[in-house]
Image 1 (cartoon, one colour):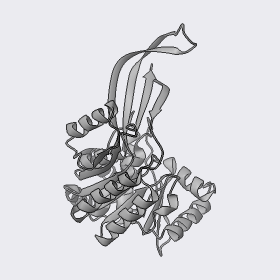
Image 2: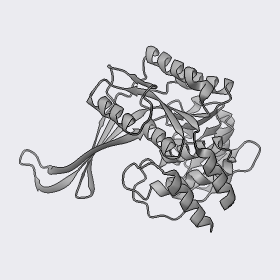
Image 3: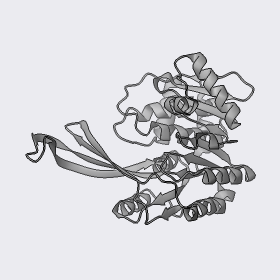
Image 4: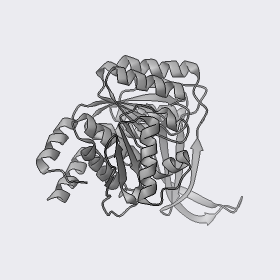
Length: 331
């Protein structure tokens, strides 16, 4: 993958500002309890964690929205939360980050999707998940579709961020893609296993290695395997581009009528891969709607994903840090 000149990087960075991106999908809350263990419980053979700190961050599609914000864009998250205490924390985080809540639908029948991590003596002890994975009701589907339709005229792109928590049903997926096509809005997708092949006709389809293996029922061990899988994705989904993320192997980019290419990853000290996929789809989308070619957008997205892997916990990419790092690397 070719590098990008400093002049071109400056041009792209300036174009990032003010891009309006809808993020439709599974909004989540990530909770953290940090503490220490000095004894075993007398009630059961488990460690007693004495908590020193407790905090919450955005996860899932909400983390994608936060990444868009930190990259200079204007996110419009669309999804659901519950009418519970975690929903109130989620709303407070939106307000704190100056992200609109106009696309948030409260569903009293479901909890706010929350993943709580207990970390003691710098070790991950346990994760507690609170969620409902069932598809949302037809009434909630209507609300999601109508919310997107009401904003579509003013958008540069939409990201469909699927964690298989029930928001992106087959109907919601197809309706949003149809509306986006009609309005000539770019559609980028971060899929999961369910409804994997429902995302037909999108701009960029971005699964990771495991998602691709699970959906196609094949292992991606060699370059030939990856090439075969990428071409199957293009053929089945009629996507403009398919971008398969391969962890330390970088990315494989596929586009109609051209040979596939590899985006090499930078050697980095990986502290935590959590949230890297959210950062990749956010950066890729922002770059594309800012005038980047798919190769340039993939390069920047891959770089951004590498940067956030150096941090512990789910941390969004910052536009200044991204472009500063890339420019320093290009010198």
